[in-house]
Length: 103
Image (cartoon, rainbow, N blue to C red; front, side, top):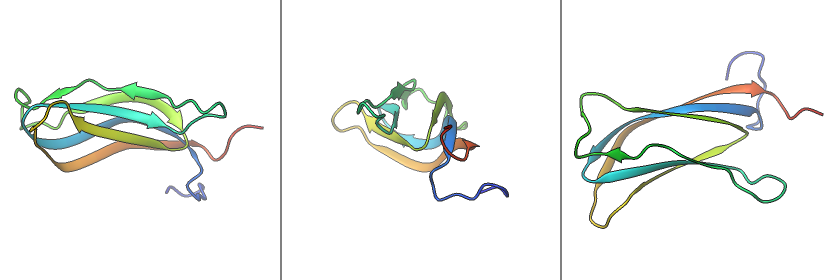
């Protein structure tokens, strides 16, 4: 955590994207989920699916998103039975934008 941001995990964060090193066969679906708001509604942001059969394994794909929330959940799943994935590296690009909610 950068200096000047005393945190207990309750900062408002901006999630800008995810980069991953993934090997396997088939297609992978990526989705960001946020915390439910006061009405119980979760925001879902679907990222572009990865086709591992045609993916250039020399490059780590960057999937961009634009979410501002306290916490986010990244869901990674295959689309068909018997598809296999191995995640070697996962980087989520996020930064704090506020210490607490306004008001």
